[in-house]
Image 1: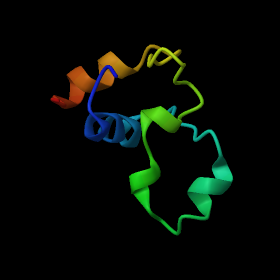
Image 2: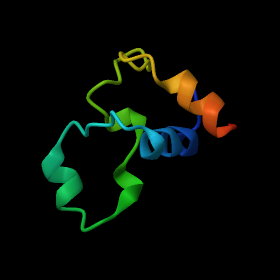
Image 3: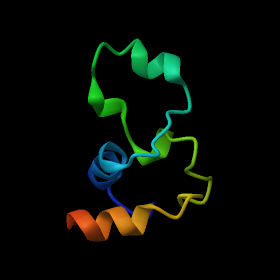
Length: 66
């Protein structure tokens, strides 16, 4: 894993391109934002990289640390 689970959550919450793999899962969670994470985003690949190349930019702009 490239980053901590907490960092993946923070990045996903700050990302305007975040798209959950399963919109039903997010909408049925009744506003539970803990499900929001890079690891369940459509743009996050099997090798733990953002296909839109937004991860590093968001981490730098928001000063997220592991």
